[in-house]
Image (cartoon, rainbow, N blue to C red):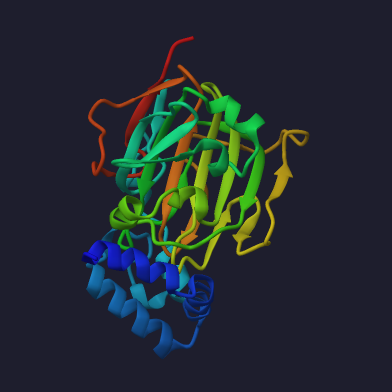
Length: 286
């Protein structure tokens, strides 16, 4: 067993949820010496550039989670211009991107996973994205951890899908099959000028929670799949580049579009670094 296989095996035997919830409690702690110790160690270990934050005093944050989800100076993340351009949803790096083929999505070399499973098991939802396009962005611990809208869209549905909390880094993606469709996640569906768009926020080991701007904290929530239908309300619209959610400790965002709806920027490939707001692709003329 090599070190990557050993790392994957260790995650199977780790009490993922108990560990993650315990870390979550610590991350919410407001006792100065506790939160300052964790923040100082984190900044040092990951070489966090606090000059990019609106509030650049790391120890002034109320707790570790407030520091971790800190707002970035907007002038450092300009949103790509143009009616047909698609904005990158998050800082991080491309894990994979490409076409959704035969109802599956590429996770890593040699590994695909089910589109229907990713979306919570509803085939009628996955039908909208068959033959479409996907992009997966991995947010490392040092990255800005708010997720923004790739395109302007009206919220139609949100689905909480319970699951595991495996790590979602490159090693795990290569070692554990269907990790994104097995982990706890929040699926957000929008109507856009390019047709249906899904932004999926995937939980991971020691991710304390996932939040959306319209519902607040969504995970941890329930042992069953839960769906919120916003289509009848038709009053939640977010603009391209606007914040739509955030991770309390890092993870992965997956963006889906339907068939022949978009084309990704040709400069993007696996492991390409990303910044929120950069041009990610374009809407195809219909």
